[in-house]
Length: 264
Length: 263
Image: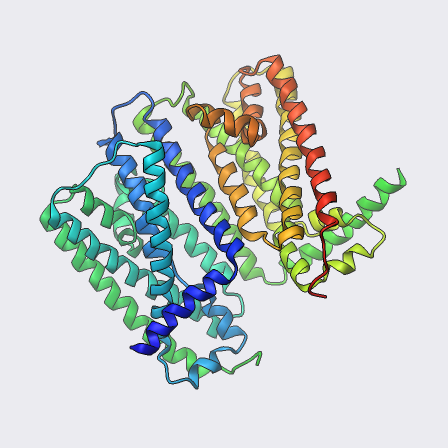
């Protein structure tokens, strides 16, 4: 356990090494949030309600979605494809650390640091912009949404690992990741609540794991889902986690068989 | 004239090389094109869904919003087509390879800016331009003046985008930071996927005149709809010229800070 705490600390040190890079990354994050926020703010200029959402609901969705997105989608597993392609994976294989746990620890470090900054930045934005924000009073919805965020984070971890494992079979790891990011960004619901989509498209979105990244946890927080829907959603999310975990382990084992430490 | 010919030949040579490099991996190129197409379609789906619930936004109809969105894509993609090399510039500065560019008898700015055109963006221009032509044809009667003004303002938008890319290069020379800077530029310009008029003050003025995203991407379409005053047209061109000149000056200043530290 001590080893993995040290990995978390190392991840923080690594991220703080290039300060300007980190500052600009945060600036970019805030700009992205502002773009989405102002878009919805503008849409509600002369309206009280749209698609069944009040202004406070949608702005809460957008602002909270930013923090949830930061936690769920923050990852260091992006570099796994490169690690495999350059042969650096050999360094992991001879160390007494589990590859999956190593990256999980790195991801926890990455997520915690980003969430701390995101919470502070969102708090500043809320103070400056004073948007009408919906505050959930039901503690159960809050707790269940936290559980949903955890499930989403695990889901994305295994999903991103799988994308990285493409590196075992191809030196081109960026294009499949880029394609998956485009699809994921849309179906995760970071820009808008997915239920504003036409019904068939929404039904399709529900069948994807991305549904549990941002949209589902926030809908739970907003209290817009029935208890049965919440339980069903959490159960389905867990099934996805189990499924992707199983596939990731399988692909990892198959990948190691073809790994040749090329590049070292 | 000789200089123009020299740089045209150089650009052609660099572009052919760049195209060959990108097209070496056909699978990768195909996946990128599919991803770009999906990104385009996804936002269009959002736009259509939005208008299904609102009918109009800031007095603009769905067709007008689509033309704003296509204009945004046209300028954004044309810029990436010509200036893709900017995304690779950091490596040159960090590794010190930029020294090799500086000693060559050609403009380092030209090489850093336009040294690696992207064929995938050229492919993407086909659906964008054809959709735009179709959408504009649906507008009904168009005056030759408004169409001419639209094209001129598109070019003006391209000059402003050029200015932004030069500023990013200058920042890279001074600080080696480029990746986030260019993405911040793209995030801010993404606000112009919808007309900047929809945003409230003071944001609207800020992204129209201070960071001239509105002049770059919203004004051309507004001119096409006959919604731009003559004063606004003149101010747009003045902003475009001034922005480009200032960015070239900043680039010159940044070069004096280049330390060739990694060589």
